[in-house]
Image (cartoon, rainbow, N blue to C red):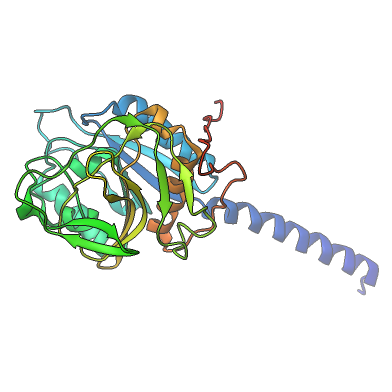
Length: 299
């Protein structure tokens, strides 16, 4: 039996259209990166800031987000065992008790084998005695860190400088104020297309952070009101096959509800997960003299 060529064309077109429709829908879901935010302890208000981090990541259209909340301070950490391997990127909104040895080893293995991680603000205060974690974040502060923790990173004369400094504690900040962020690695995927300078919402400006400082790319700096040095504010760190995006911004909800913070968080998380960045720079990105406020999408 011969079929009319018109019918064959119609059926072929219908089948092709159905196939395309079917294939496009899973692809869109597959494009989403899986992010896990870890909180539960912090010297900052993680209950208020984790929802901002989650909304920021989800608003990019690039991430699905889950949250793992640790036991409270002083409670056993033995059963806190996030399955890191399920995720493309781990976002640390955590500063508290040490995890169990098994969980620390699992996190090391995850990043070593190509996993991505993001350290937000006080997460670089955490785990002062965890050697591999300090390599992952590059530099950190407080928690008993001192000159023996490693050098401080400064930006001087147009380049990164490692400064051993004088003996004493490491990690400090001055006033809570609005400060200018200056791009230092404009060709890095996270920073490409961002202005040379932009004004950040009021925040704590971390200074005198110290650590192993290995494989650290300084993405942006800000001039400290305490040290009067250009201190690293955004950093990209390579750790074996994995990547860490380190932002010292994000003290509270006001600091996070800032287009500059949200944009660099999202682009930094995507880079940590994939080594590439597809998230665009928004038209309302802040300028050198104007903060741009970000409003979380209504649920």
